[in-house]
Image (cartoon, rainbow, N blue to C red; front, side, top):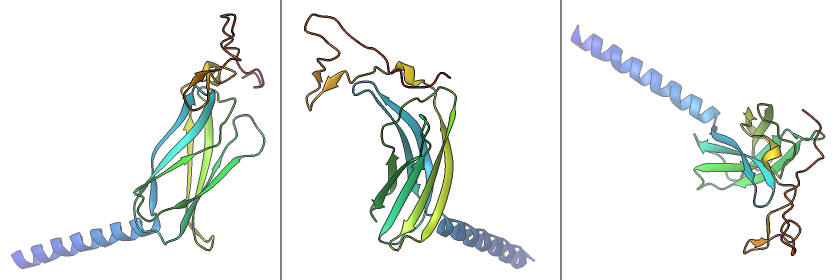
Length: 170
């Protein structure tokens, strides 16, 4: 009787392990983080989505991300190579404008092989906890050593943090 119980437990354990392996093979990457980054120094906001390795990928592999454009208009699309040694893949959008606090924005991700065959698709979204209105209209600094921007910090001592006025009213 004891051998039957041990055999059944072993069979259940092997079955559950094989189920996990099949799932990992289907989805080689999974979302591990997502956030809007507001860089006030350069007056830019971007989406950042991080994917964690969850299984093997062919070499070469590529990731194509489509970010909803908060200002309206066509979505923003990026494409980059996934290197075999990467355990995490970081996706960053081009700079975005008109991000609204509490609004949800869609992100669609496709993982592709070297022949552009879709390996995996991921649909996710981001909701910002901040509003674009916290950003200055012009970069506060310019150049590689963060020189104060003369358009913001005038020679006469006046400071102009004027905000961008191109976004529609929420």
